[in-house]
Image (cartoon, rainbow, N blue to C red; front, side, top):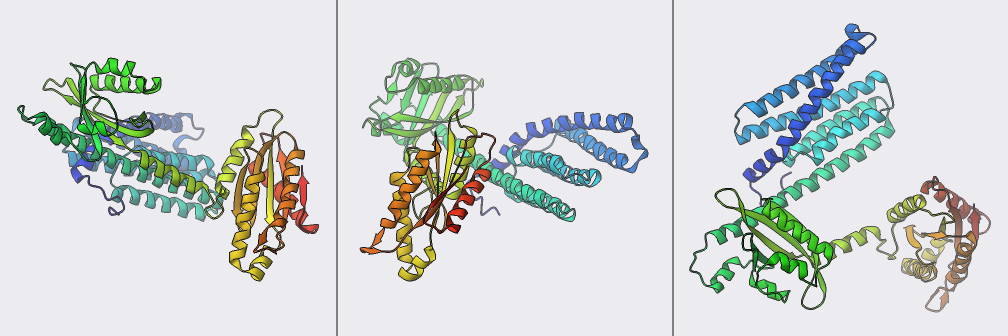
Length: 502
């Protein structure tokens, strides 16, 4: 499993980071558990009609008492027993597992006892899983097996009580929790690596002989691919490595850096504000910072830079220097943007895919203004199989791309066009009246039969179903069902026509 999360971070680095993150979270969690279970114990013993005379209440009492006692024991061991770093880590792992499994068993018993559908109790167990995945920090070899075992136990129980819907919802949530954990774990490892890199640079600067020339000084500071800098707090002077000349026309050293930031014309006010906050954080001893900025460079274009800063303390633990790295991350952000675009697109036609259209439609229905409607048009190619069978699949592919181009060219401004799969297309548009949207559909019916393949009429026709809604309480699924019903009616009445359901 560690192969999937392979990093350059050492076991000790992970151990230190894990203990640092988990300490506060688990202490708060334990304090909350103590308060909650004390309340529950009092409620069961003194405010329940039957008290401890019934088996159900006695079992609840045991659940509450166990979590209370363990939370107290955890706080005593964590706060008052001197433990090594490895022992602390093992205590945190054990406590996290106990908390998570307690939530699992308690929810199973709670569903079984009250015989409900499971919505409240599933939310409760999900709370435990979300805290485990999004707040705590452990190695994957520990965290993932905990998720898997709890998931398997809870799913087995839901299956035994025939809660199919709850099983689906819980599976989706569990997968999401694991995804959150994986992303967060990778981010923690990256942060450790960044701090180590900056620490190495800081160490080089601190150990540098005082009689080195400026050229030797720059050589030591030089790190391929990015700009390094050092900001002296007392002098308010910043020193850049020579790579700054590759991007900017600024000098390698700038005095009165705070005033320089205030007065430089190339930066926006929001950027100046963020940079001033970074400087204040260094003055206040903040250990590590990371920000992204869109800076104009000397060519006139704007490029994205990531800034990472650590604070150097003196022997009296007072902040004296801010040391950092400036990365050009423009290409990386472009790649991410392209990937996000591809996720939203149907790569074959260049239109939106089904998921993107559904997301837009559901959101737009809730944001309609007075007098607006969301129009939906579902279009299906008539007898598309005959085109593939008669002319071959390359011609069928050509027809689909031509239809996509026709819709794109003729669609109303702001319309969202998607391919639902196969030969089915969908168009969503915010409209004032149904008439203009219907006219657009009728124009499609006239245009699509004009598609030719090597000057041969391939008889491409479409049927269209149209619907619209102005009700913000309406759902995307309901609107789609109406448009799909209109499409079915168009097919039933002879195809190559448009039908509308209001």
